[in-house]
Image 1 (cartoon, rainbow, N blue to C red):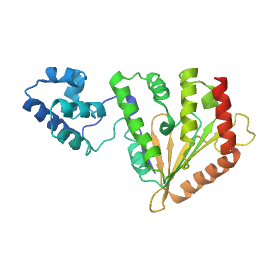
Image 2: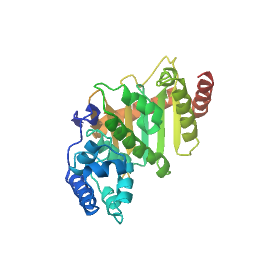
Image 3: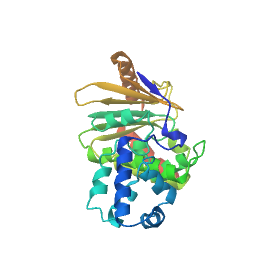
Image 4: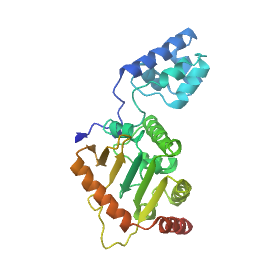
Length: 280
């Protein structure tokens, strides 16, 4: 097992890496080639001077919009865009989550049970930003933008990996809470209903009233790698736990399998989502 609590949720700037520093030097070189100061360059790419300075110093991961605008403004022959593809760090992902996120990218199956909030892979922008805006200690707008960008990038898995089996078990109360307001909840339900139309995505709802529940120990994520190894991930307030021991992973799979039988069926779950949307 591995455990690490130094996460990006603290709102601090990411640790600098060689790839971030190299990208910053590339941008700086093309900016100077264009005879632009940072003060002149910042409004052209529509980012603040401190953000531009942090990117050039290798202290901040460049947002996708920055990469595209810098490429266009500096006429960089595709070099800036190409350099961005090789950055070692994923934007908006806590350090303790990156190992799991890397496993997600090639998983042949990914199962998720959540009882606290809608999982990141399923969140709409409105729902996610509500969570970020209410984070304590408070985060800056730049950090919130970066966190959403990272989350949106992860969500591409649902579109780009049609052969990966995705299963989600969500507690009914996550929708009844109306996080972000009723309109945000309606948008979220519409989003889930659309995702559930894909053959490889299953969404089940655990009803409010349930005499027995195998998931009382908390949320979990399970995946199977291309070489058929099974791993698990559990997350708490300030860190995450990657579980690799076969015996421990087996226990979590046993609990997840039981929850699939305890939750509403796929058809019942979609019907409940539709009813909740109508009530919202």
